[in-house]
Image (tube, rainbow, N blue to C red; front, side):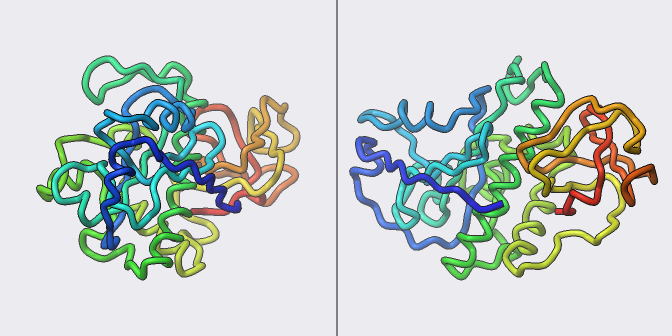
Length: 263
């Protein structure tokens, strides 16, 4: 899918107005830490004086679009510590289907919706970070180049946060997997073999892909995927109508893998 970037600079934010310069040496990935999928909600609330935070962009969890809120070469206030001096910071919005209970712990009230939103922002983050690595000649597999906020804290360059791993872990996502995916996107190679071992991530390539109750066109349709998002496949099987079928981790059903590209 083509990357959609909206330029929505936070011109009233104190960070933007301070005009600090940044020569990007790395990229830091965050998630917002609240059940708010709409990037514009943050754009509107942060675009005023007195807000003591400012990232370079938000990824909308409903659409996967990027809302760029600072020039990439402007110093942000996103990680705390010295990471602000070296890294571009990007926040992924989080699904409305979760409810935080304490700290980084949350209840998932709609697993299928949560998975779709998490994998949608993940897929956009892969594409965006590949583009930024290309623009600034960064090696996505280099030491300390691509970090999560959590990893930044472990290195002593960011404040004590657990994102985004706390949100990713139920879906088998890790920063190592993410860095490999960015590297693959940067070089134009497939991030996984044509028939990967399960579980694996796959991006839907069809405009509308039916979800069926079982592996085959002879099974009833129980839903349709229309967002060309990234989904976790936990089981594969042969079946009528297509060469192979994959079972969605959410439990929603099975999809034809002829219309899924491994990530």
